[in-house]
Length: 379
Image (cartoon, rainbow, N blue to C red; front, side, top):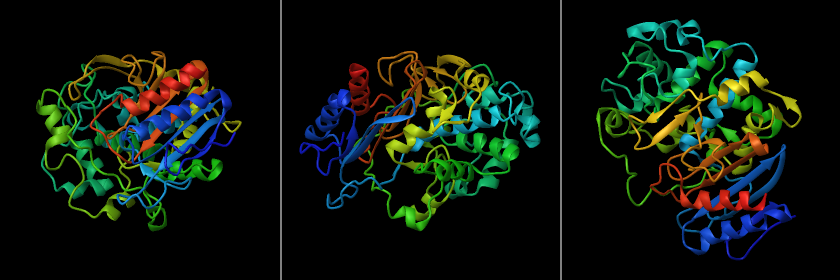
């Protein structure tokens, strides 16, 4: 049924009647002053059962958030990378248990010859940041960043601990994909976008940039806990993230771990094969073996970079802390500022929350949790 509610400005969309409480939760986020603009979507058995949006895309609150609005999802895009890797595994191009160097020979440098694909994707490789100082704009140079990562010595012994890789993860996974498919992350996403009308992008054209929402930064910095050497390299050095470039240049670049753009409906749909026995719109993308490999726990423990005890699969967080709702058997990923994607194979359900008013929560943003909890209450 179509949906709109005066409690959320410019609200529009559709939801199944059993999910009316999700619409109420969405409006509560607006009436409590927590949102500028946002959208939320839920897919069950390949059917979009919730697809709602509201608010504004601009600082002046003049331009409404529409069905065409795109927004940066930051690290939530890592879930899309996990899907792309699982697709390559399904096609026999990658093996989770094989050494990365089998596909990317240069990666064997500096003692990394035994790092497996699964270890790389579960933040165990010891490459949470670039160790040597570099101009921050270097992040826009794919070949240079991947060259540096291939040559770099691990910051800890690979396989002994997990330490979140905020920026480097996208280049590591993306270069692995490029080596075995001949295509960049943006190109691989583009193929899925064209086949299934998925508004997900890694690298925007000028035309697409015009649809991207303005994103005010959080009022306070995230709590990173103990600012150890790993945390500082991952987040706090001058070269830990791209800077010194125009917004347009950053949006046009492929920085897969932090600058994917999407709408909620497309984000929930693109990861649906992981929750739905490998299928998207009836097309089989993943084998059962690849899904099992993608969802197998690879490590758990106190993270060396983030102030959390985490459990990682090959690219996804296991929901052991209920950062992604009440089902601890679910998976997903969160992004800087509040966005997230939920993957629940038990219920063949995926959900995505995107917004442009950023919060300081690293995971478990209360706005997203309110929506996800409403979904489970409705099932």
